[in-house]
Image 1 (cartoon, protein in one colour):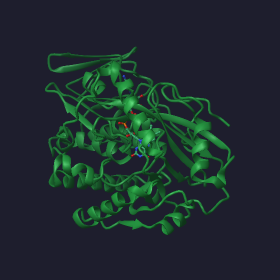
Image 2 (tube, protein in one colour):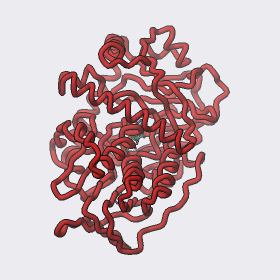
Image 3 (tube, helix red, strand yellow):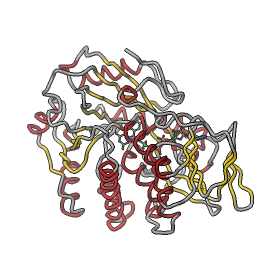
Image 4 (cartoon, protein in one colour):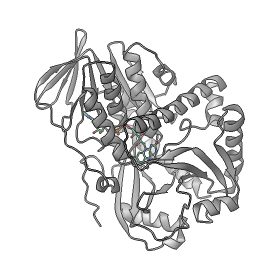
Length: 427
Ligand SMILES: Cc1cc2nc3c(=O)[nH]c(=O)nc-3n(C[C@H](O)[C@H](O)[C@H](O)COP(=O)(O)OP(=O)(O)OC[C@H]3O[C@@H](n4cnc5c(N)ncnc54)[C@H](O)[C@@H]3O)c2cc1C
């Protein structure tokens, strides 16, 4: 059992780290003057660097630790469909037309990711299908109405309602009451995607640096100057893609994006073939969502349990308990890996994008829905800078409010609210 942390910013060694070699990139040890500086080497930053380099821009990316040490290399790998909020939740807020535009954007994000993997021949253990399941009977009506909305109003042909019998057969447990089967999406090994995107960005001409935390960001004249311990980068445009891990570089990100701990465990390879026999990934209707899937080598990767403070506790013990609740036949199963990371949430559970007049853009807060969207947001940023199109505006227009209580009080206030929702999950 190897739970020793390998990322300085997240607990535990992830299963993904044992599935792919991560090449090292150098630290910044010089002064560079470029068109665009990207801060943060997760999906958002790496995809922005790749797409900017493809347009011919001179781009530098600075990552504080190693690529994938943030959420992008340690997540559940589920791609999802549409936005984090369902159409029924979004429409009352922003209306049908905008909700449809955001749905189409997300579908394009999905297609763009599949195309990227295909064109660059990047193997990320891709498997198709996602199941969303109701842990309480009372949610079934919402699931039915979601399928109706997707099929009839959003012209999405891949979602169908599952009754209890089908749900039991597809999951290999009788703990859920029904749900949605979505054959139009997939799941993947996120660290392999990080490694592949970094390599594509470097090949396209982006200059990538690891172990280079930006310590200060200043604005002088029409340029930004970023300082690390051993170098500087000057650029007229800066993308802050630091998500839940950046502090103090952008008051806007700090105010609108909040870290929440989420945790995953990997079992040893399973003999049991009744668990998710179709190979789909799955997530349930709990507010503190449980999400699980089988890896290529037949382990159960099971995520759940959120934490609203920096204390992580015994991750393995909590995840083992949750696995046994969903799959009693796995009671006592050994976890080979247990790890966690920060999910960046916003007040509306939709991404936060903000551009100040002086060429500083902050993107983050995908609220557990960033595997495709963070990647695509990086591309949209590059598109905007190249002057081609401005679809990033759709996200920027979402008008995400800051968390109440400022950076000091928002943690305890949100913890209180979340604890109430987690309590409600049980009844
Ligand atoms: C446990 C877990 C499970 C999840 N499951 C899913 C899922 O199944 N499906 C899904 O769609 N989403 C999921 N997510 C969310 C998803 O991982 C994120 O939305 C996505 O990875 C965000 O990417 P990012 O590039 O914006 O941020 P990150 O990947 O967090 O990258 C930010 C980077 O910025 C760097 N950084 C911070 N400060 C500085 C600085 N001063 N200088 C330089 N670099 C800096 C950090 O080191 C980090 O590498 C999950 C997240 C977690 C943690």
